[in-house]
Image (tube, rainbow, N blue to C red; front, top):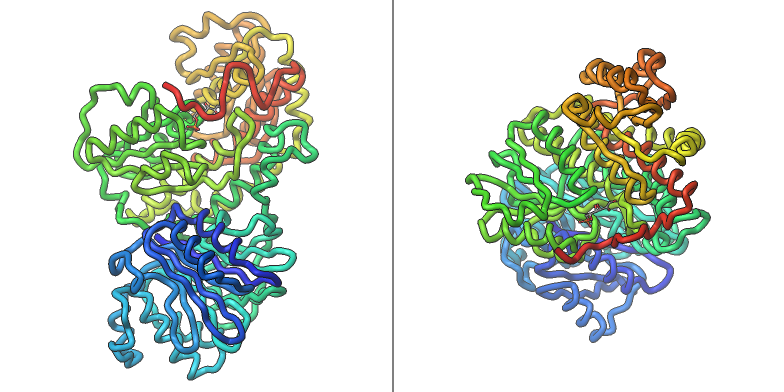
Length: 602
Ligand code: F6R
């Protein structure tokens, strides 16, 4: 995988380009380069190695510019070297490319390209050469892209600079591109992380879209070059994450940010229209593994627990999960053909990092699902799947958790896609999650009322079945972490094997009960609690509510979910209940006692 960032601005944009490249470094960093257009003249810098090397040479050469395109490379065709480094400059155009052109040798003959003109070993330079020809033929950059796209087999996102224009021209198929709109600039990047901090709105391009952007406007065209509109989304500035704004606590702000963080994460890796999931490119063929081993700590471990249910049901791969602090010391044997996945918000958790080491020592390929891209875990793993939650300040993890779940859901769909068995219902439903999350946030007062009833209780329990079992554990963790109240989560079917002894009059039991295949079993468990005087707080959907009414002391209705979406959507009620209870109790919500955001000790 590679990363693209391009900016057309009123003022010099080179610093933003470099900082965008740093944010995209997780996509590859064996070489990088940038090009600008000034007075109809292309200037460029290319360097082998990390972005730091490019930054040094750009400063040394005093490269400036208002319109620039840039690329960080992860070699697929041709080793890391200056000659293989993007951008590729031809007479009339400059190109950066992310993806793989499968028919690039055929294209050479189709367009009668003189091989002598191709100096690199890449599949990309040929595209620059062809585009140059097409520009001469059509004298219209957008028409030239339309014709180019028709002939290409493979995946790509391209950004071009073109002689005689101060615009950037982009297009994509099978590789992500997101447009960023600022006050005095427009930008485009392989993901939202690469966009400048001062971006105000973003637009996710769809398959085969073509866009032209200059400092003040963006035009988008479909594959037939008809002008079209794409939905705009609010961009949350990176520095905004560090201030509370109108919120009382960071945790509150982070809970309310989730419609955006979840949608960003989903749209970054999935295309609704073409019905494909596109994780960053890698040599790892996930569907070829027989075993997936997921390890993490705390909340991140709960996301692994949920993923086990998903992956087992949706793919043909065996899945095991472990708490990192246990896994690192276990004398376990690794079966051949396993892949190790570590999940971590901070990317610095010592136990999780040590598990990564253990995988590496046993020659197990590693994947990290991380929120902090320059973290130790991200740097050490073979493949990174970023959670696009933005910085999380509150110690109790909220939006990072739902982004972890979102990435893991996409990962399960990605494997289904590789197995050619993608579940369309699940796939379509992931694009609606943010709406359901919003609906729940609009019911904040209902959760406040529930929290109020919990102020004087000494113990609280969460129960659930299936994917709601890990969510019950997460609900209990969130609650004890910030309210300091005793709270435990149970698999509902386990109550009668011991925990039922704890139920006495008025003990609150929060039931996570989407109307799914476990629902009626759960109703039986509720009756066991009710018969012993427990107070049932039921979180369910409309269908579930019809039946549960008579068993519940309090009922909150949330939107309908399915097996894949329910853990993400039911995260909201558990976070809101914990948060409002902590506020009523007056604890230090953002920095609860005895805890730390990044646990870098054993
Ligand atoms: C709970 C919480 C912790 C972390 C755990 C792992 O709200 O935040 O349980 O999930 O310490 O941290 P990361 O994800 O940074 O590895």
